[in-house]
Length: 628
Image (cartoon, rainbow, N blue to C red; front, side, top):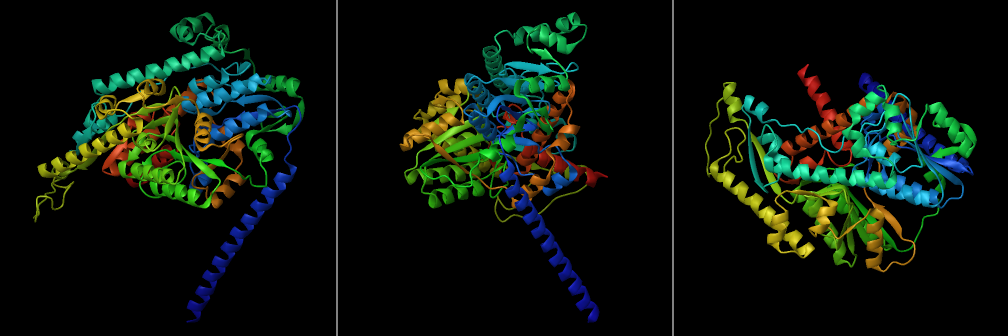
């Protein structure tokens, strides 16, 4: 007995020690946060340093304690709303003399978000303040932002490597056939290419034609935007003669880019730092250099007020990432999480007079999409107008959600549409037979044990599933027709799973206007009768306090020091992130809900999918351990 009592006391002591340690960490973090607030100042005449480390996303996904412990760089990200808010505040702040765009470890943002940030940077320049950009090398997204600057700097060992949207997708039919796995697909939509990775060895002609038209439209928008920002830069001509231009420059990619007037200055980081000292003066030694300035995080913290604001406001609901049933962390659109957040915000905050639903999602579960849409409809029934703001991607289930809106605002490069539905169920009867495993059993009805993934799905069940998919598609097109005031036949014609760029979607009346989140907020305020400056309230799942504490202790410089900066390594880093996200999407699709409204082909063309990539990385790590 004494041994049991002693063991119990030891366990209780360990528990009490852990509780004390957590409390100690909490109060240390609280003290550090409060102490830092009192010392945060904005240097007069300094620069706002936008060190865009990692991916820029609509809603930051939660990093797990394991990711912090392992030093994983997949989760490095910044929220586009914070970047735009910082730029807009700095434009009117007499203490801020310039903006420095540090794009050395920038991964990407999605073209629609690039356009929003570009608009903010042009507003900053119109205020008579310069923007300076620096990177060792520029790829598509980084160069788009750099083009907005007064001067574009590049390291002598760097280059401008523009590739344009597009690339390879993964197709698994040959592999599945090899192992005898049958993929049972039920779909509506000539262009619903989301299922093709499981059913084909290559893209169908219809899907390839639709995707080609989309990437051509996105590239035309990109080139036109860069031309407006830097009239002397001929992106199309540079790419058309790239080998010849490199040859003329003796293989020096930096010189070739400068000769083509894509950049202004070839210089090292030290030379850039010296130029910034001349521009804004010298400051304390910091991670970004010795010139006077402060980072975006510190600037926003210095601008925040301890006194909560009040008055009429527009609530902004974020639907980001895969749309899934139930609860989900930030960066993934959990239907229960979002619908409850909407209901609580509307019930508990009388200041909210309108809603903007910000969508950056290629869809997912039909039931989850409908649950979010219904939560928005419930808010409308209480007299709140709803406006949808489309980010880089708002397709399939993302568009389903937006049918609740009174008005839809998209960017020219938003990827939207994909009005189509499918169901996908694997069966393994041939696989089991290959391994000598037989199956048998009895049924009380034709549907006992169905859908039977062991013996194969019965013909009767296939009819039921296909009928269900057709019914959901009928509901989808009906929702769109009612919301957009279009004939159902017209919705079916422009639906069929096809994806469109924002400019084309406006012509097709799938969206009402073009612009960013600020345009949608202004539209919602106008509908609600809110006058003057519009206050916004973010309606989303809050970050875990424990993860937030880990973030506050993390050194943001550690990952940057190890990040790849040379041109081809940056391209490979972006490709790796897209590949992991695609694997994560396929895993979700194959093992997720039966009825889905998802746009798999959108994932490689929109925002960096950090949540899907992190999930895939974790899953692949576990798989590797099992295969050892």
